[in-house]
Image 1 (tube, rainbow, N blue to C red):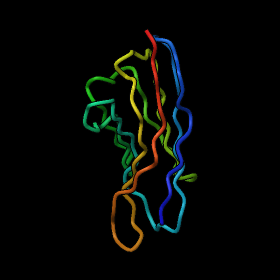
Image 2: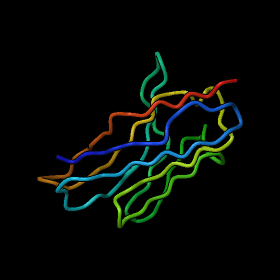
Image 3: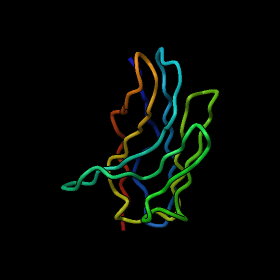
Amino acid sequence: QVQLVESGGGLVQAGGSLRLSCAASGSMFSIKTMGWYRQAPGKERELVATHTSGASTNYADSVKGRFTISRDFAKNTVYLQMNSLKPEDTAVYYCYCYALKRGWDNYWGQGTQVTVSS
C-alpha cells in the first residue's frame, strides 16, 4: 500500500505563513503527480496545487502568487509553502499522489488541519 504522511498544519494569524510536507512511502514503482487538495467545512474538496514528474506546476486561482509547491524526487516528498494566508484558506489539506504500484492509481493522505484566524 502507498502511504502519504502529512505534517506542518496548524493555527496561524492572517498574513502569516505555514509549510506543509508530505512524504510518500510503500512499494510503488513510480510517482507521476503529487499535490495538495483542501476541503473547508460544508464545501467540496478542491485542488490547491499539483506538481508533475516533468516539474510542471498547477495552482488554483485563489492561491496563485501566495502558495508555492515544490518536490524532492529523491525523497518522494512534496511541500506546500503558504504565504499571506487568509481566513478563507482555512481547511483540511490533503496530500495526493498518482503512483504506479500494480497499476496507476490515486492515493490520499489523512489530511492536516490549517486554520487561519482573522
